Length: 130
Image (cartoon, rainbow, N blue to C red; front, side, top):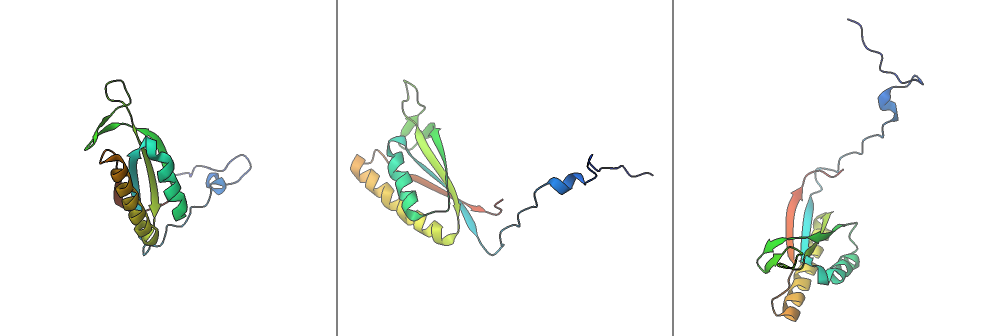
């Protein structure tokens, strides 16, 4: 049985030009995926709190719709408004600081709005980061 020639026109292997894989993080370093949901009206305050924590990074979704304990938000005339969301993946130290900061911010928002506004913080173990 003859083996196929997989070399490119310049004689190199097709995989030679692929970037080298990034080594996986150490299995001893546990990271957590955090999802923060918030009223869009409070976006600037949430982002400012994250910036002050100095987290390594986050991703923001500009508009999230749905139903929750404080009502429906589908960004239409019947159910106006929408939520914002941000996610980040951080280690234990940053995660602890994030949980404290979001709890404080949520309590402040709930107090200012008399329970109308608040934040939600969800966490999932993150087994692999590319």
